[in-house]
Image 1 (cartoon, rainbow, N blue to C red):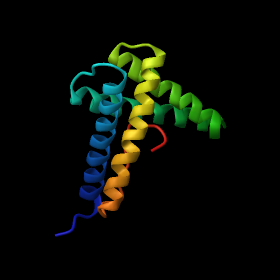
Image 2: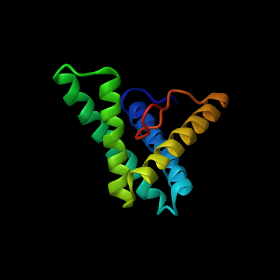
Image 3: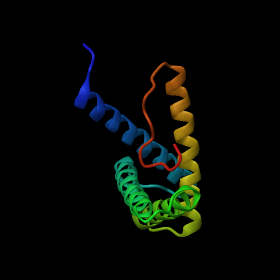
Image 4: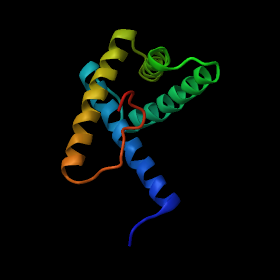
Length: 125
């Protein structure tokens, strides 16, 4: 039985959030000894919310494009810094590792025929 409507949307959201959390967890493993996977999922959720708030706020005053993306990325990195208690460089390494990890996971899922998912909480994915 196929899932439609709100159930499908919630399923995609959950899977996307778990992929984003996994990517952040892997990125954190590269940068330092990370904590639990649940911390990474929480970081992905908070990062996605923060990015969205910044994007909406900047769009409402007519700022978009590259500048909005850069500001959103800095806000996301600051969420990683806050959650893991690290500096800008290590938080940025987490971001790079998360981005690469999400890209690999989503590519593998695509090759397996599982599409329509993102990595929520990972910028640019």
